[in-house]
Length: 226
Ligand code: CA
Image 1: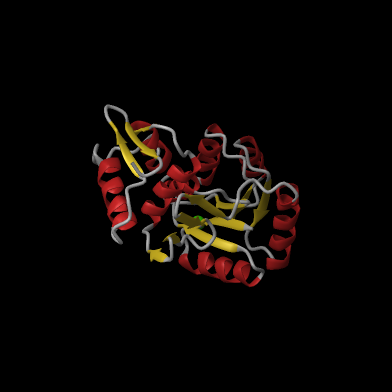
Image 2: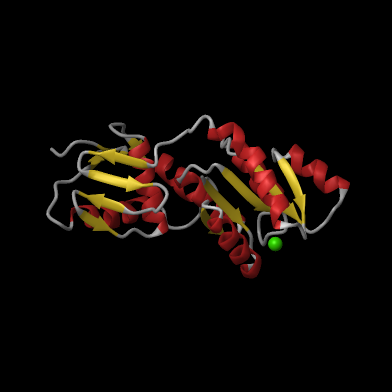
């Protein structure tokens, strides 16, 4: 079971991560809404724990964007305010449930169990994605080619997971950029090319053949070595 915790306060995020890991959940932390969208673009979560009060995008806005992108992971909202309007707005924006801070950790666990029950009986993803001699563990974020371990940055991981979930299909630069960096990314226009280059270097640094191929005029494609 994999949970994304979206919380800007380090102390609370750390407390949640530690507590949830003790209950055997795999936990990623995003400290703002943009980071959350990036994590979700690159991985499948069994639950998203989303704080309402965040710098930049609010939890409501993040929730709305995730639902627009057809992310169907259960979303549990956390807020400091016990306000009926917040509760309504949270549920309207697509959240499944709502918990007011401060809360008892036991209650959080109970809500998480209730929300993940429906996905637990219906696992949506394999833990290890494979293609040719390449393996990617979606829980530990470790990649391997054959027996060679490959260290990835979070962005490289997200990119590789995206390729592995869409093998043998030409993926346009725009699609890749919007999926990994978000449709509202306004940074360098060649960001996809730069990251694909880094990723290829890591995947091929043991002299292995290329798996990510350039598709002229389009973008890239994960495919058998030529
Ligand atoms: Ca907060």
